[in-house]
Amino acid sequence: MNPSGGLRWHWRAWRSAALWSPTTAQIALWLAGLQPHSKRLLLLGPSAGWMLPTEWLLRFDSIHAMDIDPFARWLFGWRHGAALKAAGVGWDYQTGDALAALPRLLTAHPRACVLLDNLLGQLRFHAPAWQNPAVFTSLQLAEIKRLLNGREWGSVHDLLSGPAEVLPTEEDFPAARSAVATVEFDRQSDVGWLSAAKPKGEWLDHLTDQVFPLGTKVQDIAWSFSPDYWHWLQAGWVQPLTVSADAVPNLVHGRVGWNQLPLLQHAAAFDHRATEHGAGKHR
Image (cartoon, rainbow, N blue to C red; front, side):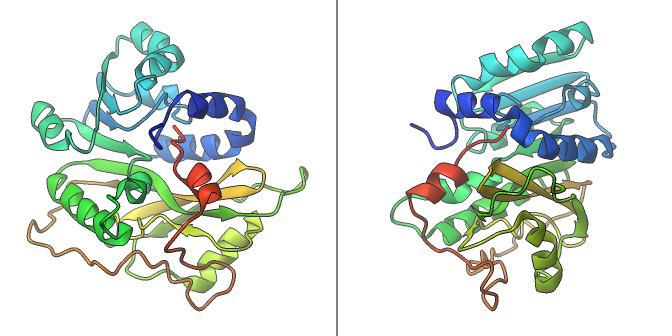
């Protein structure tokens, strides 16, 4: 089974709608605050759009989506198709590897803005056996940013994920947090924010701490994937910005700055449990 989808994943996403609703609401609020200039959307890796608000999709005149999951197209239509059709939004959905097809898609849709919907957090899981995941992910991210140079684009992706205590039902869900993309994490602030999720043990680094250009406004969002396993999502939107095509990727990045803290530590390897939780699509 491909680690980025499948019927088991869709069943879990449908069944978890109530548990995921606080995160879905925070993603919707973040998207509502965006002001894309383009009325055309290139939507990459959305799966069935389980946590995408239909209202945001209705902003566009046309939507072109692609996901590697063969079931995603039908389920996306089931969730969003009727509303899009009623509003006159033209949409099509291709099955395929959106990142491999990125050069072709950008050429085919030169005026579309781009949203990568939980694609980048999955990169480390697709590294070939002979290549270090940190090296593979860094090279992939450098090429993606080069291709998106000059585009209006955004991404929602996993930053970290790991075990956490089950929160009492009366306890408030961790609020979303606005920040700015920087080279280094603010350890004290980050741990303070995430502590509301009661993290414990070792968390997995998804190697996405340098996705956005420095200074990009980002939104940190907590996601209770299951009652005892949480993800730290990061969302950001980039207005057209020049990115050097000759930039050399930092092959040692992928650290998350937790090395001096016992609460959250970089996980260079992960077990079956981390794979099951961390590699799932969430849209």
